[in-house]
Image (cartoon, rainbow, N blue to C red; front, side, top):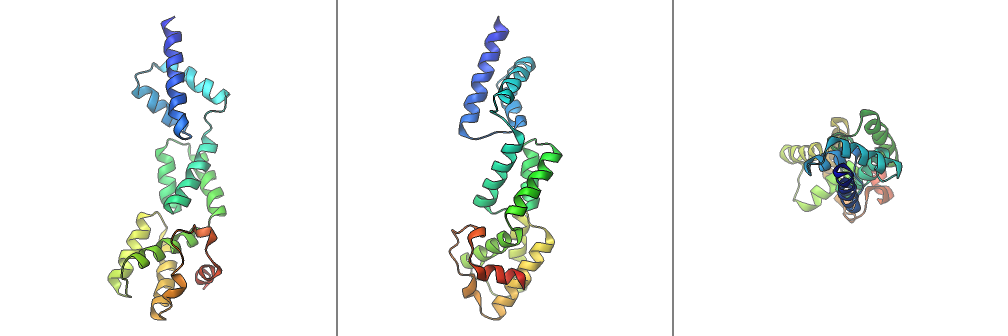
Length: 187
């Protein structure tokens, strides 16, 4: 009978943990183990949660990834790392990255981040400034190819004193940027 009580307690803890946001299966396991719940009760709770569709790693990966792209404007490399840290399987991570970065253009996101960096600092066309922006984009998880494209486009705009085309509202998400941003990327 004490096992039944522990199992109920584990379910209660898990559901309360899921109230705030969707979680991965691995996050639930770590949370319940931290609460000193037995392995049998954890397994039973996971079965209950999966059968009632309280946890679904594919759904979680898409929701978490979309949230990180829209709110933090991160690149594919960083999102991959964050998804792996959530304990998701390689196949789920791969499929999620493919789906999300078909939906959101990583080049536009990187350009948006660089533009935000330029507008928040006084940037000139010096080697130090280009390096600063490149490092910033690298920390955001963009590949070197994308960073190179963005830096090259920014150099051209700075040389032409055409930074006004970058002065869009930084609060807009990358997919709602006006067509001038798209033209910059297509150069």
